[in-house]
Length: 56
Image (cartoon, rainbow, N blue to C red; front, top):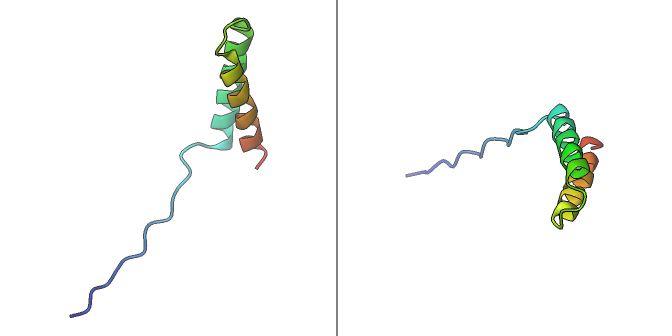
């Protein structure tokens, strides 16, 4: 008896480049409104990661 193994389906992108740009804009808006918040450095890092994702 032969068992056939199917190839896994190719992964699809969940977010488009436009989505990344919108998210980056929203994070920038948050950063400007919460500059003194200690967690803002994490949002700043996220902002830059989103920017590099749109350049791919």
